[in-house]
Structure formats: C-alpha cells, structure tokens
Image (tube, rainbow, N blue to C red; front, top):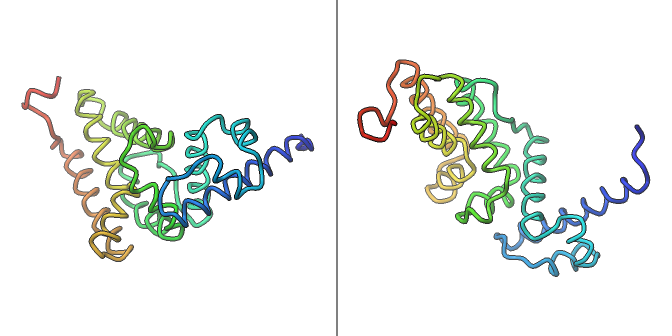
Length: 202
C-alpha cells in the first residue's frame, strides 16, 4: 500500500526531530537536553514534539532506535537465534558502535535505569531467553543472572570502558569480550554454572 501524504509528512517530521536530537546529543556528549532545545534545532514547536513522541523519554527511545538503525547500516547485528552464536557477533557490533561513536558513547554512559531506552531492557530479556532455551534445567535465578552477565559483555557500556577508559582499540576490546563470553558459554555447555549450592538457586 502506498504511503499516504499525511503519513509521509509525519515520517519526515519525526525524522527531522530525531536527527536534530542526535546532532544535539552528539555535540553535547550527554542526554542533557530540553524539548525546547530540540524544537528550536528541528524548526518545529515543542507541541509538535509532544504530539509525535509523547514525552522526553519517548524522544530518548526514538534516539536509541535511530542509533540502532545507524549501527545496522554499518553491519551491526541483532540478537542471534542461539547463545553460542553470540560471541562471534561482538567484533561486528563493537565496530558498528565505533562507527556511530558520538551516539554510542552517550548511551554507554547511561547509569539511570529510569532514563535507559526501552531497547536496552529488551535486548537483556532476549539474551535471558536464549539462556533459558539453551539450558532449561537452570533455575530462573540462575538464568537471569547468567543472561544479565552475558548481556554486559556485548554492551556499549563495555565497549566504552575498554576503549575510552582503558585505551584498548576496538579490535582488542572485541577480542577480549569475545574470549570472555566464549569461556562463559563453554562453562555452561559442560554444566559449570554459578549460584549452585549458594542458597541463591531456588
């Protein structure tokens, strides 16, 4: 079905707003912005932004989607179908983060769960689901703990810490993260998993 003129205009307006937000955030190096800031940069009214995105968090979620789309354009990949495939994707994704570094750095430094984009928690849930599917004998507590830990190894936060804070190249950071994740998966494959017998596996 052909896109209607109204839908096309809506898409263009939203694209202009998110582009303005991306430029502002990349320049500022943080998510410290007001809706008025972005309205001025995009050449629209604050009311238009609220109409399209609901609130400030809606804008942050849209920016996260935009950053993800930019990573995809540069070869970034989504969560795979099985857990053992995940380590092999780290290098590609870290390279894609480097390609959109100004935005990736901002999201990597997020430490406020109330501000984190919805996509962040979704990716965590998807990895937990991979662990659950692969190792159904684990308790829910074990599954969640392992999934969260594995998620950290594939995150922009780890890419940021290894490259920006510790000076590794993107390739070195990816190699270390992949190696660590492979060790975890290999341990799980041979039945070695955390929280057993600690009183936390029920």
